[in-house]
Image (cartoon, rainbow, N blue to C red):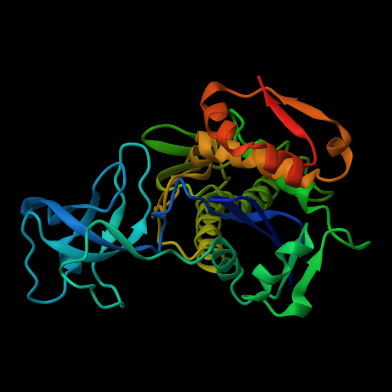
Length: 373
C-alpha cells in the first residue's frame, strides 16, 4: 500500500507558510501538517523557558515559553535532583501545543544540553521537525510519493526524500490531490463534518468539553445477510473511519461514539475490539477505550497533540494561509490572466492578508493584483 503526499508552500519574503497533506492509496486524507510563523510552538519544539510558578500540589510548574499562556510542565519529568523555583530556567519539549484556554504541555526529558544560564528565556532552542518530515513520519513504513505543484519546491523536498519519489502535479498520471484536499478541508470546517464510509457515514461534532461521533447507515443488507449482521458490518467499517477522523482532526480528550445499536453483546465486543485494533494499527497517539454500552455508546479518551484541526483552520492566520496557497496555485494560468482579483474575507483575515499582498508578491508570484473587500 503506497501513500501520496502533497507538499505546498507560499513564500512572501519574511513570511513562509508550508503545508504537507498525506493521503492513503484510496485518496483519503490521513493527516495535515503545517509550518506557520503564527504557531511556532508545536509538538516537538524544544524551548528554554522560565518558571512562573511551581504548584507542588498539582505536581506541575507553569513555565513561560513565549506563548500566549504559560506551558504546564509535569514535575515528574524533571531530571533527578533538579528543583524548580520561581524564576528558574528549564529546558523543555512541547508535547502538546497550546490552544483555546489551555497552555502547552511540556516535558523536561530532553536530549539537547541546556544552553548557558545567561541565555535569555524564553527562547526556542530547537524548532519542531518541519511539516514535510512530520507528514512523512505519519506514513510509517508505507512507501510515499511526494507531489509538488511547482518545480521550485524540488530542492526543499529533495533534502528529505529520494529524488525518484518526487513528482510534479502536471504529469499525466498525477492524482487529483488538490480537489481531494479542498473537499476535505471544506468538510472539516463545516458546521457538521460528515465523512462517508462503505455503508454509511459518521458525523463529528465538537463542544468545549467533548467531541461526539454519530454513526449512520441506511442498513441496506447485502443479499442473504441478516439485519444484525448488516449492523455489525456497518459498525466495523465505521470503526476504521472513526480512527482516521480522530487522527486527521486530532480529536482529543473525551470522544463519545454512538454506534448503530448492535444486536448482541458478542457483536458489541467485536466492534469495540476492532476499534481498539484499528487505533493500535493506524494511530500512534495513546487511546483508552471503554466497553460499549448496550445502546452502542463508546467513550474513548485520546491524548491531544495540539488544537483540533477544525479549531486551527478557523484561526485567521490559517484561513489567510489557505487563501494564499490557493492564489499561488492558480498562478500563472487561469485566474492569473486577470489584471485584478477581488476577495471577500472577514476583517480578521483581511488584517493578516493585507500586509502580505504586496505589489511585488502579487505581480511577481501571483501574476495579478488582489483586492480585499
